[in-house]
Image (cartoon, rainbow, N blue to C red):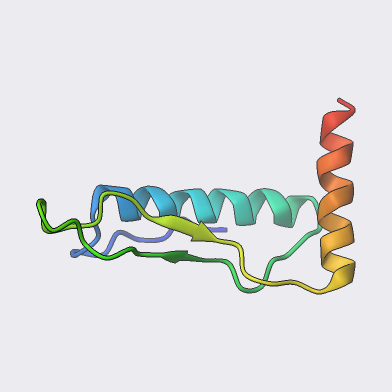
Length: 80
């Protein structure tokens, strides 16, 4: 997955979340798992600083087969 280009209004924390989302999506894709609703969530701006001090990677929802595939990938990683 190609990195997300930085938008002019994107703060460093938002960009960090975008990069993390893209890295996770790429790793899951290599393992054969796709979470179709992955995105980032931007919290309300910090009133003192005028911008969000963090952003969250939202993994969204997935079907039961995708959840099982994700669990299998995680467990396989633990056995290494």
